[in-house]
Image 1 (cartoon, rainbow, N blue to C red):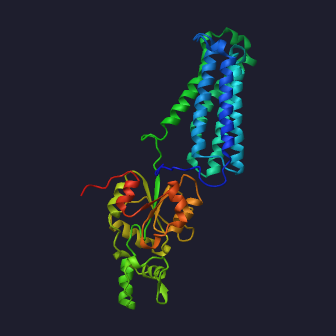
Image 2 (tube, one colour):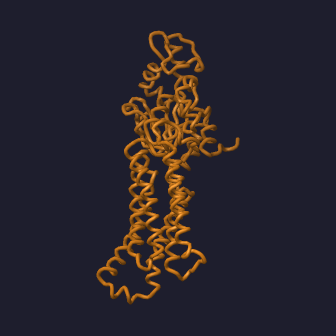
Amino acid sequence: MIIPNQNKNAGDGRFPHHFVTFVEILFAVVLGASILEFNEFLFPPDLTSPNFLALIAVYFAAVTSWIGWHKSTIKYPYTDSGAGQVRSVLDAVIVGTYAALLFFGSRVDSSLIYYLWGFVIVFFLYFIVGELRRAEYHDPEASQTCLIICHGSAVLIAAIAYTVLHTILPEVLLQLPTGVLLFFIGLPFATMVSFRAWREWHGLPWTVRVSTIAVDMDGVLVEQVIPVLEKLKQEMGVDLQKCDITDWEYPIKETNIKIEIERAELEEKFVRQMPPMEDAAEALQILSGKFNIVIATSRESSIDSWSRSWLDSHGIPYKELVNTRSQGKTLISVDLLIDDYIGNIEDFIRNGSLSRQAILFAQPWNHDTRRINDLVASGRVRIAHSWKTVLAILGCKFPAE
């Protein structure tokens, strides 16, 4: 995540906190009651007892699942959507599955087949819940699907193998050494340890997905207002300063600043000569080493080649230039948007994944931020008054002067 989100639970459409409390209590009751019920297998510890080893495997899986569930409900709270409601029910079913696993673990010498298939069910439920979470938040990062499938497959293969031995070749099963049976007991534990370890490692520098940033051109990379005002002064005798433009459609005689900017940008010479914003090129050079950069412009698509030439001539690195004039910036698939228009920021944040974040690049025409005050308060939107501030927000340093 690029900008720490301090209030992901804010907003309407969330399940009451009581349901989360219910699942937490259910977890606690299941674990606490099982310790009392199965204390004869746990105390004193007997490392040679299959029942003890199986119970330890289930306790590890249940406790780490509890911790993981708690983190996921903070980052991705249940919503009132169908996916959110089904997800909440399945999370409770997972707790019930662990309760059954504790029962089978305490009798694993006679219930090993149910013990193994119980873990298969757990991974299957993890997969379904993860897919529901991804659908609920439209966020592919909401679940590590491949990780679940890989580890769940290992347990599934073991369960199938033991089932074949148990039902078709029972005489072979009786002749197997104790070590083989301990392998079947220990495999779910080893698989769960591996699964949880990979989940914790996910997000460290060597495994983190490279985030993608969309950067607007006019007003963020390109200083378009000052040259347009100079042009208008020559052509219309209008003497205005950039600080006077307090609205994106600021009226100027029979026209407005938005119309005049779009008209000026249909002139190739004007486009090529527009200056970059201060420190923009240097900042993009730094950011390109950490993020994928997408240039998102709402200019006329017919001048995209001029925009690319301008970017190249100023040494601004980018992976792709996307014209958003027809579709808007809501639909672009990026993690963070840097834009100077409040409407774009608002639409991008509120119509996409809750993991989306944005930086409003301060300009005279966007000082009234009341429309996005709640987004700013939540930490999902930050305001930057310069490219040096953008770098600081994104954890990068500007070269010392």
